[in-house]
Image (cartoon, rainbow, N blue to C red; front, side):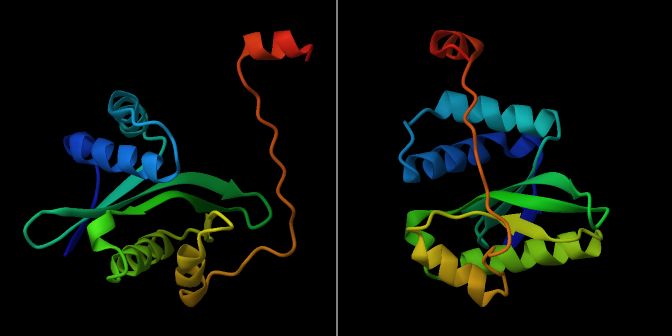
Length: 158
């Protein structure tokens, strides 16, 4: 197995995996939009993407992380936004292998932590993360406000 930090040469395989990941989370199949999004992230260096392939070069999994800074610790950290293992390769240790790699890479770079969210219903992912030493957040409460477009806000009177 090999894990590679990706660049634009990996665009097509990443776009396919990202599209499959979105479908897994019940988003519409839209390979062109997935490709455009991943391309923009690569070109603008908004995220870091890692690809796990087997010894034959078959793509097994990918991850996408976004850089951030912890003001209190005054150190960088990474937010793991996306982790996806293709269906035929699940429950074989590939997610664990990829997560351990990410931990090693970012620890060597001096990052303060890796942070992630997962669906409350995704018990398999929760079990993996907890087995790797990730701690469930119990101190902070997270809030979201969906912003929508300017036209949507104007219609709603905000």
